[in-house]
Structures are given as C-alpha cells and as structure tokens.
Amino acid sequence: MPSAWKGQIVFSPWKSTTRTVPAASPEYRRARFLVALSRIHQRQYDEAFALLKALLDAAPSATALNNLGVIQARRGATPETGRAAYYFTKAAEADPGDPDYA
Image 1 (cartoon, helix red, strand yellow):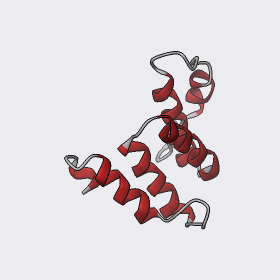
Image 2 (tube, helix red, strand yellow; image 1 turned 180 degrees about the horizontal axis):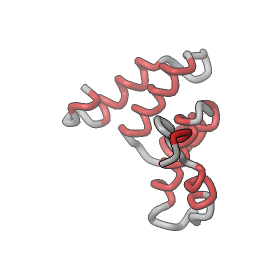
Image 3 (cartoon, helix red, strand yellow; image 1 turned 90 degrees about the vertical axis):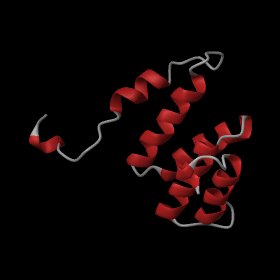
Image 4 (tube, helix red, strand yellow; image 1 turned 45 degrees about the horizontal axis):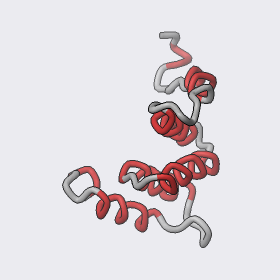
C-alpha cells in the first residue's frame, strides 16, 4: 500500500458498485448500508443520515440506529435529527441481547 494511503480507508469502489444494485435485489439493503458507512467515513454526514434513515423507515435495524447515533455524536444534534443518545438507546432496545449496544 502506498505510504500516502496509510491510515486511510478507501471507499471509492463501493460508490459505483453499490449504486448499481437494483432495489429488488436481496443485497440492496446491504449495499445501501455500505454506502452509508462510506459516507460516514468521508464525513458526509447528511447523506449518510438520509441513507440510514431510509433503511430504518423500511425495516427496523439496531445497526442503522447505532450508526445514526454515531453520526449525531460526530456532527452534533439538531431538533430535526435528534440526539446521539436517543439513537444509541433505541439500538439497545431493538437488540437487547447484543452487548455492543448495551
């Protein structure tokens, strides 16, 4: 790996690949989730929040809730988007058996 890449996460291949996954595909939700993670790492919090919120609106997900909390912790809460603690608490309630959310 070139020294300029050390400590960096390279997500650009995901961008083009995941956008071509059809909505009817069983891999669609995972692809959209990976795009959202990419946006978090690129500090594109608004786009990541929108992607995760859309996934959450379609089906419950402790993982999506947890990552919404991560976004809010990094960018700061607003009245429209909520506080990080809210999302972390909801993730723990959605999957109480997972110690990562406790």
